[in-house]
Structure formats: C-alpha cells, structure tokens
Amino acid sequence: MLPIVYGVGTCLLLWVTCLHPALSFEHKWVAKDSVSVEDINEDFHQIFTGYKDHVDHFRFLLEEGNFMLIGGRNKVYNISLMTFKEDEDRRLTWKPKVSDENLCNSKSDPKYQSKCQNFIQVLGKIDDGKIYVCGTNAFKPKCRSYEYKEANYPIQIPEYVSNHEELGTGKSPHDPEHNSTSIYTGGKLYSATSADFLGRDPLIMMSENQIILRTAQHDSNMLSEPHFVSSIEIDDMIYIFMRENAVENINCGKATFSRVARVCKQDKGGQYEDGVWTSYFKARLNCSLPGDIPFPFNELHATSSFSQGNYMPTKDNHNRTQMFYGVFNTPDNSIQGSAVCAYVFDDVHKAFEGPFKGQRTAQHNWLRYPLDQTPSPHPAQHCVNDSKTLPDDTLKFIREHPLMDTAIAPSGGTPILIQTGMQ
Ligand SMILES: *[C@@H]1O[C@H](CO)[C@@H](O)[C@H](O)[C@H]1NC(C)=O
Ligand SMILES: *[C@@H]1O[C@H](CO)[C@@H](O)[C@H](O)[C@H]1NC(C)=O
Ligand SMILES: *[C@@H]1O[C@H](CO)[C@@H](O)[C@H](O)[C@H]1NC(C)=O
Ligand SMILES: *[C@@H]1O[C@H](CO)[C@@H](O)[C@H](O)[C@H]1NC(C)=O
Ligand SMILES: *[C@@H]1O[C@H](CO)[C@@H](O)[C@H](O)[C@H]1NC(C)=O
Image 1 (cartoon, rainbow, N blue to C red):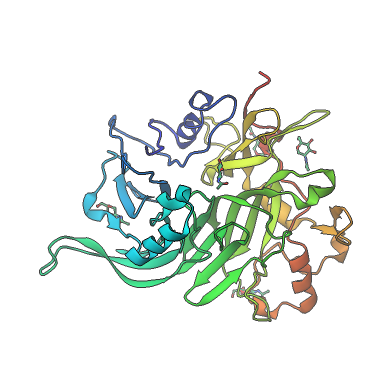
Image 2 (cartoon, rainbow, N blue to C red):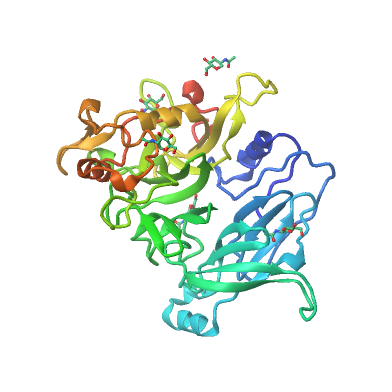
C-alpha cells in the first residue's frame, strides 16, 4: 500500500498527522515516505496499491505540481495529488534484461530472489518531457534517460522511450531496502547510497556524464555505516540528512548520531585528480530533552521539507524563518521513544561557520579544533569559486576534519513533541 496520508490543512499539520503515534507500534513512530498536500477541495478515497501479488518497495521520487512520481517494481507511477488516480499513459516500465534477471536468480539466496527486479530509486527531471531514472536492476544498478513521446503516427500509444543507458553504481542502491537518497539538479545527480551490495562502500557522490566526485572511500571519518534519510538543495549547496555511527563517541561506546552533511554544487575537486569532494562537511543534529541528564533521541528517521515557518505551528505569519522538522527515535536497545525537533536554518549555517572537531592521533578523543589553527579562509563557511586552486594544507585539513564541533540545537532548545515508553 502506498504510505500516503489523507488530510486537509497546512503542510505541518498533515505531516504531523502522518506521524501520529496511534499509527505506530508501541512507543515509536515509524518513518514512511510521505508527501504533503495543501488545499484539497474534495475528499478523496482513492487508494493506489500497485502490484497486489509482489512487494513494490515503493519509493517517493519527485513531487511536480499536482503530481507525484512513485518508483516501484519495474515501474514509475505518475499519480495525481488531487485525486490519487494514476495517469496510466505516463507510466514508465523498465524491467531488467532477462539475462540480468536469470543471473541474479542463479546467484542469489532464495530470500533475495524477489529482489531480482528493477526497483526504481532515482528520478530527476532533465527538462520538459525528459527524465533521468536509476534502478536496482536485479542488484546491478543502471540509469537511463527517457523521453516522453506523444502518440503520433506511426507510434500508436504515448510512452516513455529510452535513448541512453549507463551504469548506476553509486547512484542507485543495489537493494531497494537500503536507505539512500538522491537529488538531480543542474544536470548533475547527487546520490547518497552504497556503491556495493553489502553496504560497505557508502558514499555521497556527484555524477555528471563521466565526471565523478565522492566522499573518500573506506574512511569512517567521512561516513560510518550511514543510513541516508533525505536530501535538499538550498542555494549553492546540497544538504544530506542521515544517521551514522558516531566516530567521535567511540571512547564512550558505540552510538548512532544524526547529521546534516553538505557539499557545494560548484565543487570541482582538488588540484589532484582524485575525484574527492573539497566541500564535504557534516554537523550533528541534537534532539534531546534538556535536564541534569539530557535524554537524547539520536536516530533521525525523516525530515520535512525546508520552508518558511515558526518554531511552533501557529497561524501567525510573523517572525517566520527558514526551518525544517526532523523525526527522531531512540535506539532499539534503550527506552523506546520518538520526538519531533524543529531546526532553524541559521543555526545550521552557524554550525558550519564554527570550529571543527579534530583528533590529535587515532588514539585521542575528538575535541574542538582551535579556530586560530584552522586554515583561512574557513574551509566550510562558503563555497569556493575554484576548488582546484585550494592549497595543499587546506585540502589536507578538509580531508581530516569533515565534522563540525557544534551540535545543532533544536529551536526552543527541546523537542516540540515526544512519545516515550515512560509515559
Ligand atoms: C505526470 O502526469 C501529468 C499529467 O498527465 C503530466 O503533466 C506530467 O508531465 C507527468 N510527469 C512526468 C514526469 O511524466
Ligand atoms: C532503513 O531505515 C529504516 C527506518 O528508518 C529501518 O527500519 C531499516 O532497517 C533500514 N534499512 C536497512 C537495510 O537497514
Ligand atoms: C544536546 O542537547 C541537550 C539538551 O539541550 C544538551 O544538554 C546537550 O549538551 C546537547 N549536546 C551537545 C553535544 O551539544
Ligand atoms: C522572533 O525571532 C527572533 C530571532 O530569531 C527571536 O529572538 C524572537 O524571540 C522571536 N519572537 C517570537 C515572538 O517568536
Ligand atoms: C567568486 O566569484 C564571484 C562571482 O563571479 C565574485 O563576485 C567573487 O568575488 C569571487 N570570489 C573569490 C574569492 O574569488
């Protein structure tokens, strides 16, 4: 079933409705793909179900005007947000080649065989009528560009026709259940996924034709067993939300922390042709109940879109600022709980203008790195015009210090909603 929530009202109301604890198991909210719908005039009771005899692994791909594009098993569905009806003329079908499917079936454990299909994970609009699509393709990710052809003699039915295919490694996950995210803009695909089947090569990657930039491989300071949650574009940067192993906490035991990472759209890599970002930095998102012993909700599971709002949902249009909401859970092995925290964009920005975290050697704790020893100009503050001109010592610093020292506090200093097993 398509995890979509009905409702009328503001974005926020709807979004919170969809996380209502009554819909969840026990005391945790379960993250679901969702899209907010505003100003619906009519009641709709249409439910889109996709395949009834297979698991679709539905993925929300893109919201475009009054339509949303949903990836499924060998299909992209175009569904009206007003009526929930699918425009079947606009359905895109892309099955794996029979040889790929057969190879997958012969190599896979029986429990994976249902995934020897093409689950569509990525979709970007190239321009009118043209889209870029990637799918798992029977554990051998591929991408294609498609063009929509209207019915016109000798073409009998309108359809999406592909004119280009390429490898999708690092763009689409191999497994539709992996938590990944992507955003296509300005002819470039930004993907956050894993480049291998087992998830041991996580990456945040930009690809444009043959050009690739990525996070350094096998470097747990860059990414440590991440689960990617969402991505957005703001001005000259791409922001990626995730949760991952907290390398900085390693001396206090294994923990998962939530992060917002960002890269510059105009990054061209350093002076050495190693295809690694010069603008990848990340900061922790703190969603905790304050107190003598703060109670943390460390695991981010969903974010709202970035938009103008104020900290608490009010009808008041004053004092609005760029902000977003995140839904957090506690880890499975602790008191069960969920929270919604609100974050103001300015606070995110400030974290990236502040000091970095650093480690003197691999045996030392992660501490605030003195700002007066940080290269100037501050490497994370702005996007540089030409990253190829960055000096060696700045590049080395960037590579060794991806993490900002400041944990971004929620607006108001506390979650706006919580639900725990203690109540
Ligand atoms: C989805 O369908 C609508 C209505 O037919 C159409 O205007 C829109 O271009 C379609 N989107 C895509 C990406 O096919
Ligand atoms: C993806 O995240 C969801 C919750 O956000 C989690 O239940 C699921 O196990 C994750 N998938 C994988 C493959 O770890
Ligand atoms: C996170 O927030 C809590 C509650 O406000 C605070 O006590 C704690 O120090 C913060 N943690 C970090 C790392 O900033
Ligand atoms: C309006 O925003 C400012 C700056 O963020 C803040 O200090 C002030 O408390 C806000 N006022 C209200 C009524 O929320
Ligand atoms: C970067 O480019 C912009 C616009 O071309 C220019 O205004 C700015 O001064 C440049 N910055 C640097 C540091 O060169």
